[in-house]
Length: 193
Image (cartoon, rainbow, N blue to C red; front, top):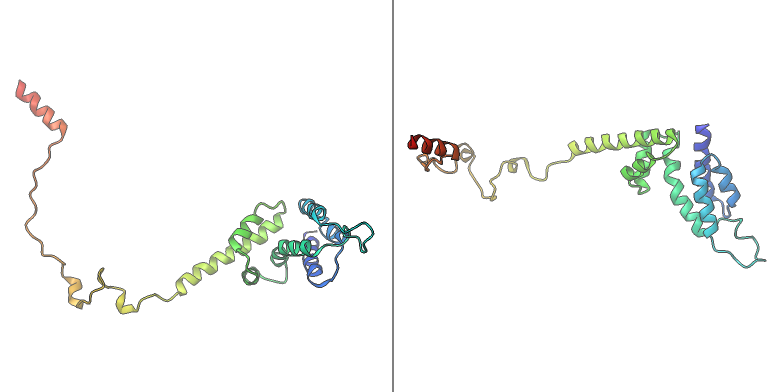
């Protein structure tokens, strides 16, 4: 059942991309297994501007250009996510290529009622995190290797200077030791006896 519903989303996106005219009934038929999305489709259908009564074809039957773009933008990431021909890494790369914010989209998918959409989003997010970890180690340092150990002010220095302290140690400072309130109180009490 889940594979068939995933195919319906992929078919919907293909229909919106290729067909010159798409009927609202076709869209609703393809999304019949998604009651939450059907409510959104009906809302988009009601917001579509209507032409005069006798204009052909009837505007409420066909998806208008603005609604078509909104539908395509909404369902295209899902079609990419649910395509069984792609691995999670390939899916992640295709989502990146389409300009989808992967973290945000996958976290949004976690709120979906369908567990298989949540599982697919989790696999893509794990692949994204793994790639980010690998890429972090592959980045070359911003400075040449001989500049990694440099002084704070950036001045040139000798290699032997790293092993010597910046200032020579002087005699330890002898500041008067502060006495806490408890020893002072005890000293006063002893003095009164």
